[in-house]
Image (tube, rainbow, N blue to C red):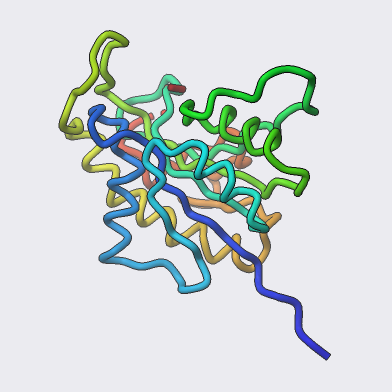
Length: 199
């Protein structure tokens, strides 16, 4: 009798290292080199490769945890754990733009590309202070608030990942128990520098 295979968890950094605070996701993945997650977790920096991430979401993972910036109206540097709505049933029309890296676009693209069920997707989001204007092609350097949030994001991942490995359907609780909220809207109180905006 064989035992069931362990849950498969993907932790994916998302963002452009040349666009100021949008580098948050890749910076967190780089910081995980110094504090690795358990070996059964696949950790990858996808940067701006939306098509690559969409195909990877079809690889049979139980859960995908994306690390990204998101404008949610909180103080810069705030970490929020959110669960995007799954994509609506596909309608006729062209596939979503492959270069859009917001979670909704990537999920819609993955749903368009394959018949396999998508994993549960969570987003560990950081409120940015500094993002380029639409007419700027490059804005190097992250804000102090987002640089400081990288270490707290690594702490958050080390708290959330064991919960999701044990039960992919669990709602991870972070911070002091009385301050934890449902995952769809949960700010991470003990890990926040203030209050999270969406790209």
